[in-house]
Image 1 (cartoon, rainbow, N blue to C red):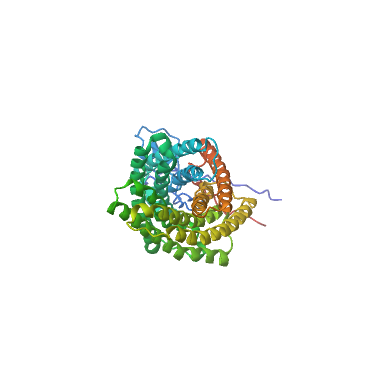
Image 2: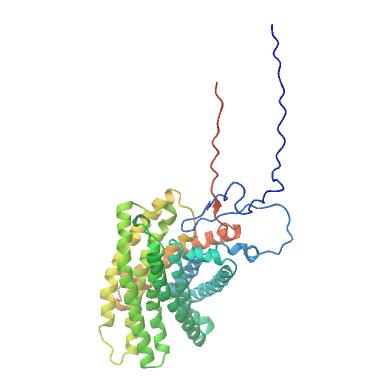
Amino acid sequence: MVTPVHRVLPSPPATPAHPPDAPAPSPTTGPAGPPPATTGPAGTPPTTLAPTSSAPSSAPLSPAVRAPSFRHLGPQWYTPVMGTAIVATAGAGLPVDLPGIRTVCAAVWALALLALVAVLGARALHWRHHRDQARAHLLDPAVAPFYGCLSMALLAVGGGALVVGRDWIGVRAAVALDAVLFGAGTLVGVGAAVVVPYLLIVRHRVEPGRVTPVLLLPLVAPMVSAALGPLLVPYLPPGQARQTLLFGCLALFGLSLLATLLVLPLVVARLMTAGPLPLAVTPSLFLVLGPLGQSTTAAGNLADAAPTALPAPSPYGAALAVLYGVPVMGFALLWLALAGALAVRARRRGMGFSLAWWAFTFPVGTCVTGAEGLSRHTGLVALDALAVALHALLLTAWATAAVRTVRGLVSGELLAGPRRAPAVPRPATARTR
C-alpha cells in the first residue's frame, strides 16, 4: 500500500494592487473601463457617474459641486409657471359672479409671478454651473422642445398682469410688466420656433415611432403671443403703433397655426400605427389642446382689439372668430376625451407622477379662455357652462400637480439625478465532474 504524499505548492507572491511603476488609473474610467451609464426619466440623456471617494479632500469645490441641486433642472420647470398663471387668467374671465373670485385669482397670479422669478434664477444658476448639462438638454430631441415653455411662461405671467394682476399692482405697473414680458416672450418664442425645428432637422434624428406631442411646444409659443398681444393694443398710441401690434399678432397666429398643421398629422399617424405612447409620456397628449384652445382665444381677442386699432374696422371680426372657434373647440373636446381616456389607461397601468403632469393644466386652460371668448361673442349659455366645467377640470388638475410637485421638491425626488442603471451580473462558471 502506497501512501500518497501531498505536496504543498508555494503560494505565488502577492501582486500589489497598484505597482509603483504603473500609471495611476483614471479617476473617471478606472482600471476596468468607463463606469456604467445611468438611465433617467423620459427625455433625459444618459449620464455617466464617476466613482466617488471617501477620502477627504482639501481642494476647493468646483461650481458643479457648489450647486448640485440644479444639475438636472431642465426647461420643463417652466410648466408649473404656465399652469399656475392660466388658472388665474381663466378664472378671472369666467361668466359667473362669485364673491372674492378676482381676489383669489390675483393671489394665484402673484404665486405664478414668484414661481417665474424662482425658476428664472434657478435656470440661470444651471447655465452658469452646469453648462455641459444645459447643452446636452438643448441637443436632446426629447428635451429641446421644452425651451418653448420659457416663452409661454413669460407670456402667461405678463398677460395675467393685465387681466387680474392690475388689481394689486395698478394698471400702469401691469402695462409695463406685460410689455416687458410680452416682448421678451415673443422674441424667445419665435427663436424657439426656428431653432428647435432646425436642430431636429440638422442634429437630431426623430424616428416616426418616437414622435410625441412634445414637438408642438416650440410651435405653440407664437400662438400664445397672438392671443395675449391684443390685450396691449388699447394701451398703445393710436395709429401705426396699434396697427403694427395687431397685424404682428395676426402674423404670429398664422405662423403657429400652419406649423401646427404640419406636425399634428405626424402625432396622429404615430398613435394610429404604433399604438399608445409610453406611460411616462402619455400626459403629453394634452399638449395638442394648446394650439386648439389658444388659437380660439387668439381669434376672439384679435376681434375684440380690431375696433381700437383699425381706422375702418370690419363688422365681421366677431363673426369670423366664432366661425373659426366653434369648429376648433369641437375638435378640442373630442381630443380631450381621447387624451383623457388614454391617461386613465396609463394611470391604471402604473403611470407615476412627473413634471409631465403639468400638461394637464395649461392646455386645458387655453380651452377655458377659448370657451369664454366664444361665450362673449355668442351669448350662449351652453358655452358659459362649458367654460365653467373646463375650469373645474383645470382646478382639479392644477391642485393635483401642485401638491405632487411640492412633495417632490421637499423629498428631493424631482431634483435628483438619474438613477444608476442596474449592474449586469458577471457570468459565473462552475466546474463539473
